[in-house]
Figure 1 (cartoon, rainbow, N blue to C red):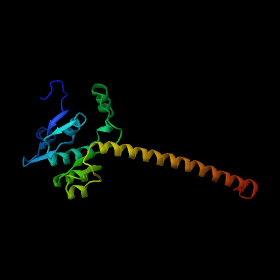
Figure 2 (cartoon, rainbow, N blue to C red):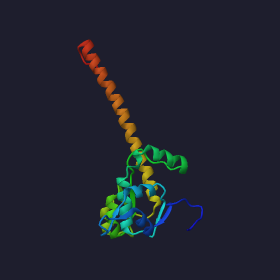
Figure 3 (cartoon, rainbow, N blue to C red):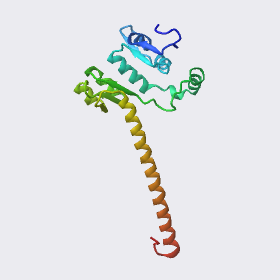
Figure 4 (cartoon, helix red, strand yellow):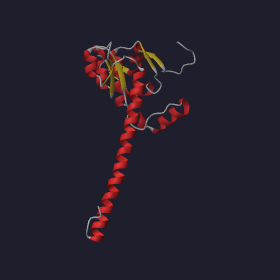
Length: 183
């Protein structure tokens, strides 16, 4: 253990992660992904160290398939006991990568970030966003800009709908009451 006071499953190596989220198949010929085990681990997981590209893909797949948000009892228990909030809908998955072997995970994630300087062309092609400066702080900046643009579009649409609905109501009222359009 790195630190004695860490909660369980906060910090895991790729090998530990694989051992916990895969179970042997019925016929013993290999392993298969166990979504129930994964759903017990992922709310606590903060660092996945020494992980393989397959671990990234497994993480993205598991988060995309998780229905933990639908279990209100588990969500309230996580909030009360561990101060972990589970969003009330499907989890949005963002993944970073720079190599060819990261491409499947970048594609599987809802938002894939590839490194622009150190990244391979295959990773850049698989990603949704390319970080031109290879700086993780750019992700935060991009999220802030994206939220600002989204809020601005919402305000614009609200204004336009309000003005246009008022104009249509005025025109229809005038047309029916006075037999001519007031506009």
